[in-house]
Length: 269
Length: 269
Image 1 (tube, rainbow over the protein chains, first blue to last red):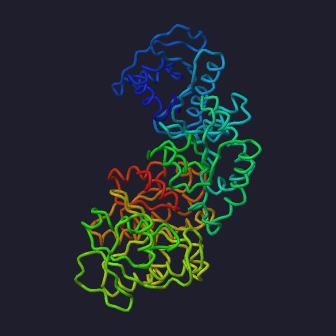
Image 2: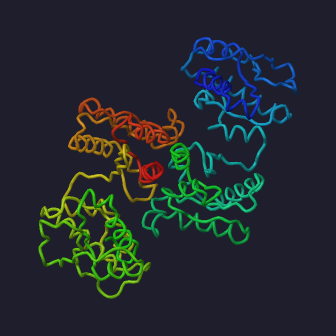
Image 3: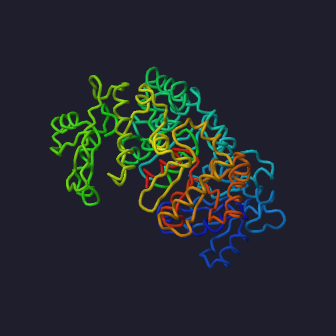
């Protein structure tokens, strides 16, 4: 359900009511039944789903959406006001989702908006869902990735200041991310994934005039993956066109150097 | 014509042959007549335009495309091989274009691709067209800008390493760029331009968790423009959606923090 003081309850109720969603899955809303009922009343949204309490077992044979009610909101929550109580409740929904998924009770998790400052106030030091999910599942190798139709993007870094993201464009991290993308795309059924690496600097630094990271970090990482690992990765390609090229089918995925380099084309395309 | 060893001669000949171009202007190709003829023969492109030599005056009454022949290529030029000779010739086309424009012989300049390393080899220390044109015209206040249908973007910096572009996100530079964008959009006929400032860091730094430049530089700059100058500028807005919003008509222009932040949405949209 996301942060209970945020837009999560509204977008979750709207999404669950969509035929497009109902055709592909049976949603289990992990959140707060009272708050969802209040949101539905206030905004005149469809609701009235069956409620299952946390201490009950999620039935195997549900055929309609249900609310998995955690009852974990302490005190009162004001819409639009960030608080430790809201951050803690939102974190609880993510933890419960991972538990249900690990137990095989649900097949996949869709996350709703969280407020990272509220999470911090509640004592969680994760910059976003990616790191939180990695922690809960004990994943040692992970990356944030976006998929939008043909366009798949795997990120070198997530929610860090841009100045820090630049420092994270380093050979070892790139090699690990390329290997991870290669392996996971194979598990998705792409036999020999065609990967493209985005450049960090304008025009891919144009021969070193506009930056050094391409020559010192990115090219050595690509060489290390192409030769010994025999991975089909090319680049670095100028960031202004590589995402467009991938969306037209030239590559199966692009490795992006920083958050907005990936988010801008995902949302524009 | 751009760098004579690059793709410029080909794209210029193709563009000039387009009806879409011929409907709106009478092109004057500033370049090398022999190289253009050779390119046209090799690629079977339309050519055969009248040739006017540099020492002749450009007639006022041309009604068909012409080639303004500079004859400034020293030695031989190899396609795809960067060289000082090619850089110098390409620079000469830009200088001649500015002269013709300043003299009122042409109304506007469209530039073709140059190779910035070749320019450097030829002794020109400009990172791109923007700075070169500013130098030739003596412009003290200038910025690179992109226009693609509804989307107008003005850049804080051009062709510099991303690490340096971050350091250039500073209050005074932002104030100057906002003022420049405001003034020039008014000259274009927009009475009270609606300007949006893009954030530098992911999610606009989300309250300072992911970076400091929004709070220390961008917000003070916006405040300085809104109050004393009474400019309609808002932000900083998360970069992943602000360009999309502008392209849908919500803003007349966006101020972008660095090159790729502007180029990615321009090319994707």
